[in-house]
Length: 183
Image 1 (tube, rainbow, N blue to C red):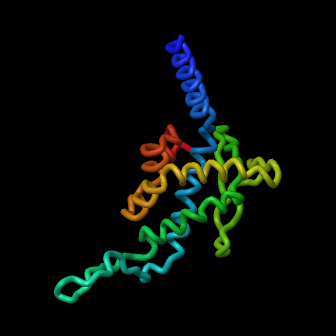
Image 2 (image 1 turned 90 degrees about the horizontal axis):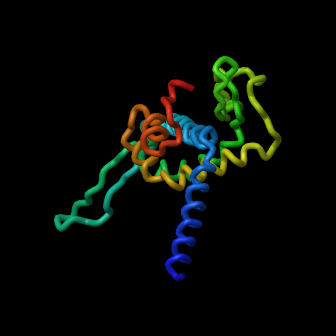
Image 3 (image 1 turned 135 degrees about the vertical axis):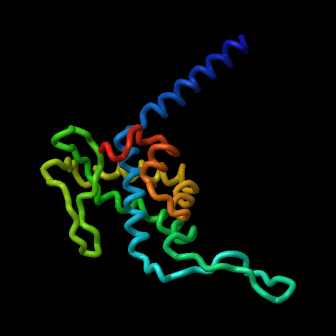
């Protein structure tokens, strides 16, 4: 009898675990991952490349010297961590977009950056705006991806990996099952 109860509990637990993973909307989480990378790349590009930060220990060596080194601020772990804290707030600038040719759906940025740079934005007719609360799903997905992959994100950006989209969204998280260049 006790064995049967344990087996039933395990079965119920497995059903809940598998259903929670199956509910992840691939378009939503893939778009959130790509948006995180895009927003971080933009934020990093806005930092003066001449700015540096001291990292390392602030203890004195026996000979009276201090061992520290300077790294560029834009790609320092502390700066990237601060950027990650606020990256999901910009998800309100994204909406669901359907490519008219391929019919591929993904969330894309529709709002211009605050710096006034004019970008090449797609036709607004292809965006689906579902009210003021529509971005909440994307923001939640963004927060989930950041929470799960914070160390990997910081590592990739601090090392200056060239194709962060593919590395993070395809290989590490598996949220994008195809090449980013396909979308």
